[in-house]
Image: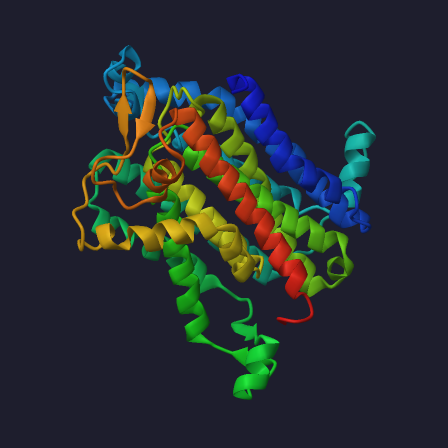
Length: 411
């Protein structure tokens, strides 16, 4: 296996090279400059996350919010207390980034570029933002911030998982109440012909119910595909990059000139960019061998952000294609999650100190982590994480392939 630094570099290049290419294919200069400014803020967010994480880790360790790495049990590394709730750092930086985006967008981006390039001289021109845009943006900020709070409360109070399952419902309420977008869907062409449905179907409250269910699923799906160094932050980074690429491909095409389509994808970019940047900053410390645990603070924050980006970007169907491993892991875990099969507190594989490899239990837990070990055999924790993340990347690529293959046929 390559060195730790080389693995992180390869992951960053694989995730960000596509979005970087399509950013420079955007023809509209106002859109391009707006995203470029957001990218610069996100780069600062990456640096801020790297700086803040050790500070948060020291504080949580001093307060006893720490744990031991069960996947290294029986070795000196398995006896070392590791700070938990490290997700508080990237979550805090992320919220600051999107607040900065909102401040930037009060000004005309072209006048802002001129003001900066002229050495901060001249007068900035204000941008007239639609009230609906501000309401949606602040609702997204409130929902994500609420989920960060609930995640940290879970890390501290150890909330039962049956309660965790419904926590995103409360966090999604600000978004649900303030949502001002459409509540209709384009009906797939095969269903139009088979069932005699119109091309566009207004769902009303049913659509808002779907928004809540998607928020609950995304938040918990990141939380239950976990337990391996780098897995939670790694899958978040890959999905964030896939969403970013999807948005930029759309903005670089004809749809980028249609305001109704462009604005939703721009909104999603403003969430995906800092999510990818702060997750990468977290991976610097959480990649194998991890010096911090992300905690439910991060998994809840990441899941809610992904859900909000998909909902307000109006590509929830494509988002589910990016989340195929999470969908499969949830369905495969249902017997244990709902008590049909015994469910231990930690659904982790067994570590063999003699070989340094992980293997499934004699009666393996029902999740993707253990299934991967059953299918491919015992391996190191680092290799296991890389295999699952490679699967995540392949599913994201499949999602793009399915969209391309069904373009003009499905809808």
